[in-house]
Structure formats: C-alpha cells, structure tokens
Length: 156
Image 1: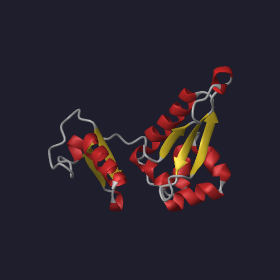
Image 2 (image 1 turned 45 degrees about the vertical axis):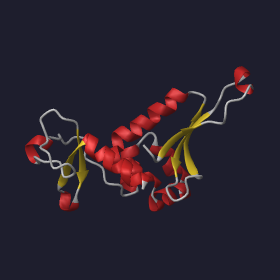
Image 3 (image 1 turned 180 degrees about the vertical axis):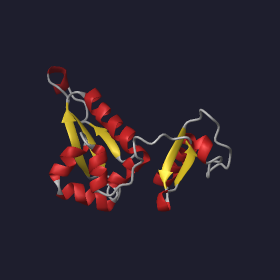
C-alpha cells in the first residue's frame, strides 16, 4: 500500500553488534516526508504482519488513512493511532472510513456481471474487489483492474 511504509535507518557497521530498528509508518499524502509511526521494532516480520492485517481488514480503504482529514485526526489523537493496529475496523469507523462488513459474503458473479473498469464479465472464481457506493450499493471490480487503477491514480 502506498500509504503504509516500512522504514529503517540506513545500514551501518553498528548493526553488526546491535539490532536495527524498523518502523511502520502512515505516510502523509500531502507531504511524503512526514508520517505517523504505527509501530517500531527490530522484528521486521512483526511489522510486516501488522501492515498485512491493516490491508486485509481495511482493503483498498487503507489508502484513506493518509488523506488529510484522517491523518490529522490520528495525529491529534495518539490513543486512536495506538488502537489502529489492534482494532483497524473500529478505528476506521471512528474516522468514518467506509469498510465492507466482514460477515457479508461477496458474490460478484451473481450480483454484478461486468467490471466497470475493463467492461469484461466477472468470471466465477476470479479475484474481485468490492467498493461501497452511494446508497449502500456495492461495485465489483476485477482485483487486477482496480489495483492498477488505484496505482495509476496515486502516481499521477
């Protein structure tokens, strides 16, 4: 995810004898040189797992964490930022970031037949992503189409 970054100081000889600390950071979309630290540890894999949990639970909406309003709210409320890694759906609700209900079964091939990006049929068993639309209507996309579209939007 472009909004989450796993960072560490440049490697140096001192790390031969001591641990190298990594940080999981929410990047500020308006100023990529700034960020909010979600976690800090010499265990890089633990921080990767934390990032994967956020992405898994929030889906494509994880990108909204770096947007100005959510970023400022997290910056001004350290307790909310601290809860983000353990309860991402609760924090997303407090930030009013829309997420798909986890208990709802997704069946894009039965509900919506065509991907709105490539206009091709959604085949049974294909990787799909769902976004909440106005009035509770969901829109389904091929995962590859939506991922490509989001990357292009973030880059330009």
